[in-house]
Length: 420
Length: 162
Image 1: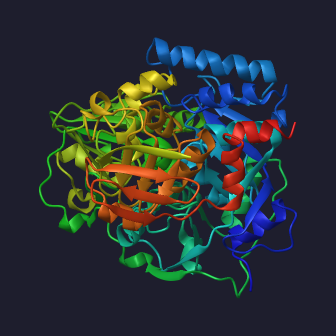
Image 2: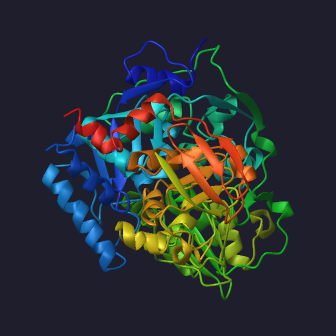
Image 3: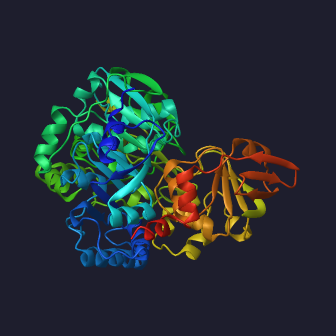
């Protein structure tokens, strides 16, 4: 029996010729990642292990992005704690405010992940790097500590679901709509413990930013990882961003999938996930009249260049509706600069929105855009759980940057087509 | 090893944001986290929970974030075990890694109601509902996890290797 793409990468990193679903393996790691919330716990555990050094100073990345720039004294203490650890251990990829970005936008941009890698990160959206053809998965702080000490992690080899993408997306539809559509179809535990392997000739039409968004939300279907095959666009991206050698793995013809889904990209409509689960999806045509108080555009899901470009295109020459707060935050400092150069920041600010430094802040109800009781937000982030963005009785509607920007203009959830 | 306690019962998809909201993640102190455990789904939980109590929930318990603070908060609340039909995978790993016992048992989830007095024997996987006089059988841990648990969590398991 053949192997899936994920299984091939895991086998190679475990020093095995082949693996099969359910097998327990110990794999060598190419990168171990943590943020300012998960790393403090990992550092405490690391110190208990009793090793002096991390396994490889160039293969650990620490990105304080969640409550930074420090939101309060306790957050500042946590950041100080991990900064001191990073300096003490000589960790090469520690990114301070000023060079920091939202980790899953920053790590690929810095070229720290390439195709064929095995990556663990103490952040559930570490699955984002599957867009580059790497095996990449979220773990907790203890696994991060063990990974920093040993350079290894244990995995149960996942079974797989295959998503065959066909056709091309229509105007105003993006990777966000594709992944929301899929989560709506299979549910928030539809891929529990499994790989989501994307395939099909529809992938060629997806930009890297679309693929990052799709892989990013694999966890929202419960998946262990999401992964895309490597094509010319992937190679071009890696050449632009990384000096590391990549390795291309392809699924075997006879690889085993528990289920195969065919998805016609041309039929996907702008899609919105209603509170309080990402699986509560409706197409924009089924949304109805939903008035909103806040719009959030950014995050590890949708804080990349194309996201800002589409948002600015819609906001350009228009005004954010009275009574609506629109917060836009870029994924990284480079994205921030590029948005400045392209005049997007001016479009956004002139429309009456705010343009923030990179931070995870509003996405998880940390800071920079918390909701009061009874308030509603349209957000390009990834979760709409109870209390996710603030008060337990507030509501988050997940959508694409295009839908979010259009909604900011009208004050209710809006199809960008309706503004044309 | 046996534990016994009263049951707090929840439904599907209990996510890590309701187990411990992000607004409290500016600390990793277990006792501080325990004060806010389950706050957004059950504001009375932290005040009512007693040492040994058991959480029972349906599908996909612990979905969402990778925050280890979620099982840490539950463990520090005094909860002796979480039983669910299924767990989200990162939560599952984290719970094992920090030594919070968790069991997957759909039958128990169907049979047990909030407030029931339940005893769990980890060596056999037997769950006894003393209120209803019923027993359920949970899947035993796979061998590699038994090793981690026998070592009292992943860190001590690794310490033995250095």
